[in-house]
Image (cartoon, rainbow, N blue to C red; front, side, top):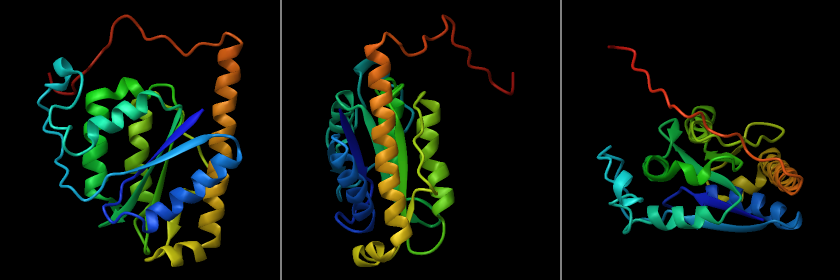
Length: 209
């Protein structure tokens, strides 16, 4: 089993990465393979809702900024941790733009696979950022994995994040809870339990007619 972790910080191996490493380390101890993918520093455009991905099977703008490459890795993954820094009291713009296009173009890749969000902040905005990221899971039929507190760390440097003892403990709880859920799902599959089947007709209702 494998968990794919997204480092949604353009600053590389800083605070968000430090939190994700603590989760990954715990997952590894539980026998779960991990891979951390960073969005990097290239400009990441937001989704323009063109719908071309419906025909192409991928984001038509995603070959140069890692969006499509991430989706291909996601096909083989069993669970996900999305990490993002807090910018202006919400999840960083680069991470949000990246995930908007990932899910708009290929949300079915993630269905029924557990996911969790992790945010890092200096002081405030963590709860709003978690709410922003958790919505990707709940629109894509993904079980949401929790910890023993909200999945956040505080600090302005990796060293400060490591000093956030409660935050780092929350990351370890998250890793163990993710491993537990993956093992439960795998055991269910081995015993013939399949995921829910979609209804034949999909309703999309507008509020204004």
